[in-house]
Length: 233
Ligand SMILES: NC(=O)c1ccc[n+]([C@@H]2O[C@H](COP(=O)([O-])OP(=O)(O)OC[C@H]3O[C@@H](n4cnc5c(N)ncnc54)[C@H](OP(=O)(O)O)[C@@H]3O)[C@@H](O)[C@H]2O)c1
Image (cartoon, rainbow, N blue to C red; front, side):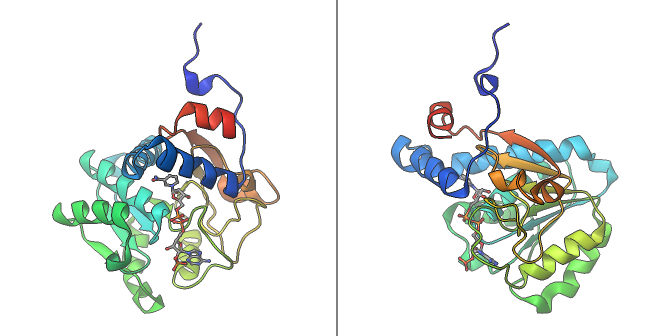
């Protein structure tokens, strides 16, 4: 039987630096637009959500950061909306600070009349209580491999709220707050049910306490060229 290309080798893990190098190569050297990768990342996350819940079960809360990890969450939200899922959306930061690709998704969602709750600081946390209570699933797109140092507010508190909710959680790429290299928590870290690893899984999901944060790890190439994943990974 001929195996599809993405199954042709055993799964490998990569360091954060290596994954960033592969991303840069795909985007800058090969010329795959970042928006295209984000669209595929969003689709992979939305598909994972679809395996855990149905639109009739209740809303999904998508928690996004202000970086590209957050952009992947916004891209997932667009797909889930098209599939009929009710959503609560929040961005830990200000919408005006989003970079181009995440901002594109934020604009689309707003024009589709989906409200995006901005949580720039801990003062807005009370507004997150109802969505946390109502939702049946949480998508954690707060922080990915761009995390630097101990998690700052308001994300630290949002992570604590997510964990305290007891709801199933899908982490985008890496559970927020988990060090992608060491598997050590950088302060509070999301305890995920499923982690959708983008490109290649990060070694921190398998090292130290990593597995207890990452849950089941699903890998999606997000169409990063197979040659890069095989040669550089
Ligand atoms: N093309 C694509 O769509 C593509 C391809 C590959 C990967 N990805 C995704 O992009 C992610 C990486 O994106 P990224 O480089 O923008 O990084 P990121 O993981 O989204 O993190 C960067 C964001 O987090 C904030 N941040 C960093 N450290 C923090 C801390 N300790 N506490 C609180 N906030 C912190 C940064 O704010 P400041 O700038 O203010 O510090 C920034 O807003 C990957 O994990 C993956 O999900 C996307």
